[in-house]
Image (tube, rainbow, N blue to C red; front, side, top):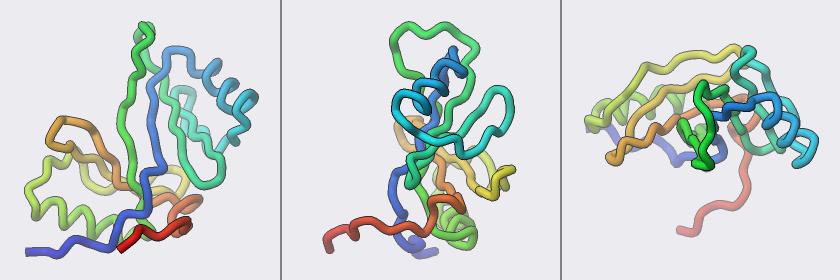
Length: 138
């Protein structure tokens, strides 16, 4: 049986689906002070405060005050660690939704489901992977 790869480096990625993408982008950038990290296309933008990653994707449904969280991501430190996590999770019988794939901004990720059906994304992202804050207590 495969051993679990090195520890995840934090939950610092959140993907929200929003019906008003441009308005939300202006809010997070102009009001909260986030920076544009990458505009993937007209329906998807990535923002950052420098040590995190917020994805805003256009939702094609009206909002009713209920947040639409598409997925959340755990950062890993390298492409090799991402691939090791994929092999480990596959060996554990975890439901994998796709295989590791490259993004246009140098990131690489894949998606899986937790036991409650939440979509989780292990993610290597060159802008935030490898950063260290506080080490967890042993």
